[in-house]
Image 1 (cartoon, protein in one colour):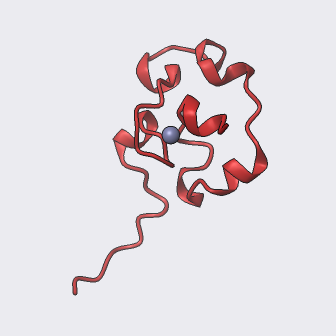
Image 2: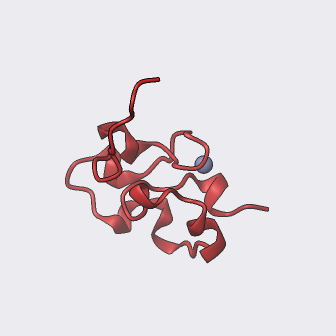
Length: 74
Ligand SMILES: [Zn+2]
């Protein structure tokens, strides 16, 4: 067993483009285009349920955008 360093403060560069729940492409404009504003992202007008946000790992909250599928579960 190799000890795993605590990386909870250090989100990998790719994290911004991947949904923290399903690891799929989140299509987040902020991660995609430099200089984009959050208003350009599809998520700008969405309300995401607190229970959905609670499922996101703490280290990724506020950093990685969810994908449309995970943000609005059926
Ligand atoms: Zn997802």
